[in-house]
Image (cartoon, rainbow, N blue to C red; front, side, top):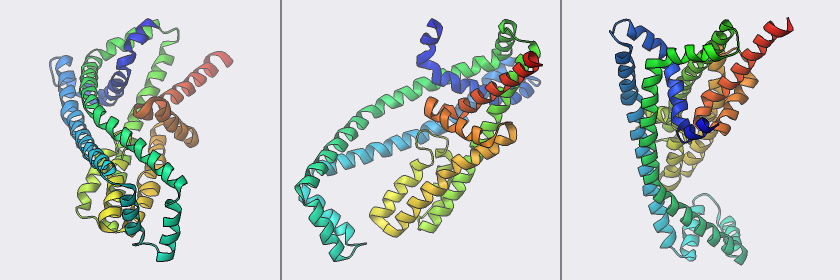
Length: 333
């Protein structure tokens, strides 16, 4: 328990390193045949992970954080420098674009009431405080990402280099038959690979569906935004929503309300919903588990562990199923 407590601050990057080491294991095994030392193979794969995964997603995260900071300061300035009557005027001008004058008058009579005014002022103050707090935390988030990236890469290197020693050590001290332990490790390995493939396919499908939706909504450079949706699908917690939600806001404010409503519906029910449908279908090819169990293992894993729960949820369930099979084979028969 003390060891677990000491590792708790680093548990997320360590878990990600375990996941990536399993995904890179076949490449590591083949690469070792052409190199004199396994250390060199582990170093090459770690550097490739840095160049292909950590740096691109770090840049994407920095862009998202920068946009969030600019938006937060803009909204904060807007809230602080507008009176309640100015808000009403802006809302009236906005609703006149989509509603008849009689409907606008009914709405204005309601929002001019004292009850709604008190509610609106409280909401605006709360938003202002949240945005100010967000702007203060952005620097902390950046430092946390750099630190966790260092822990992730360091752990990944040593797992790739010494992973086989760790596995043999665990096998020796596990009170189970050797073939049963290998079966469990094999199940975990296949689950990680299936989840990794599922993530890539989901990213590709979300990027393609996003590009189609952006084109229909009349957004320029829709192929570029589709590519951004592909990369954003891997980034927690918003995923593809980090791309299409700001585009909905842009269409609503600048371009066309009808296009904004279309993209909002398309984003919720097509782009983002693709994750919950396609990922379990792809994973079921490599993971022998009922679809509904696989579906809830992914959702439950995300809720319990965050983004890494996409891997941990199915791993926990498949390992449990393997233990049931071993128990039936060894004890019940």
